[in-house]
Amino acid sequence: MKTYRIALLPGDGIGRDVTEAAKAVLEKAAARNGFSLATTSYPWSCDYYLENGSMMPDNGIETLRSFDAILLGAVGWPRKVPDSVSLHGLLLPIRKAFVQYANIRPHRLLPGVQGPLRSENFDILCIRENTEGEYSGAGGRVHQGTDSEVAVETSIFTRQGVERILRFGFEQARARRGKLASVTKSNAQRYSMVFWDEITQRLSQDYPDVEVTSYHIDAMAARMVMAPESLDVVVASNLFGDILTDLGAAIQGGLGFAASANINPDRSTPSMFEPVHGSAPDIAHLGIANPIAAIWSGAMMLEHLGEPGAAGKVMAAIEATTARGIGASPGRDKTDAITASVLSALD
Image 1: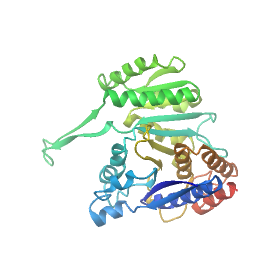
Image 2: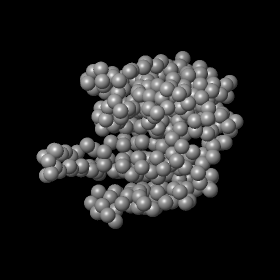
Image 3: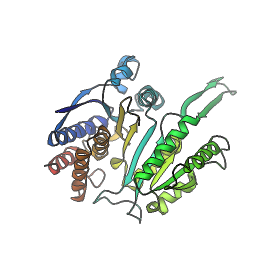
Image 4: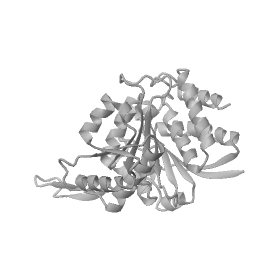
């Protein structure tokens, strides 16, 4: 029997509940499909930071390197640890160390879920550059605490980084409906974003079967609300992709349905899968966190591991659950009830 080694990082708040739910569903799907998951859980979180002074141990990256994939719950608890510390101490180092440069986030309405838009027939795949751009971490502050204080944040765009995420987007569009939307703000950012547009146009010659349209970020935000059904694959920089995918989560019914994958396409290092929502400290003790985004992220993990049959069955179980109205409305159903319904639908 094939066994995949999975590192679990439940993290903070509701991350623990939804990770446990996803684990139960994925293990059952594996057993039903002739393989197994060997999971190891690590307590790296804001509580870990308060006890140890870091979000993960010094050998954390090397510890994770031997796994086939990573399943993460949620990171952050601003009342305890500033987000700038928790994010740069765990999530971003993992993405960068393992060259997980493609962040994939699907946006569509599940059966039974009511979205806020008139349009319901949309299926958008957002591809976000995940390791550089606006989140490169280049910059600093001087004269802190004085009237002369200066803060500088520098975006870094490399030809390699932009080209590889655009090629990844083109390949996804080729495998789907053949439409790629490239998002920039080149009318205002005349260096980095013009650079991105130029590479988009050059690469489009290698993909004559893909229809390419370039949008400014503000126009794309409007289009996702007014005409989401017109979009197929959307590719954007780190910051723009981050913002657009929260909008995507909103139009698909909320963050409880928003799954994501941090992919290293050449598979030389483990990829990481996580729901888009945060740790939600305000509901962490109520047992009402929706685990569907985490379970959907787990299905993406199975697909990436080469188990599309099992991934498809997990997605079918999610859809059967929401079609019955279970987990379809934020906050209405308990985490355990939603998980039990998905597990039952796997039978």
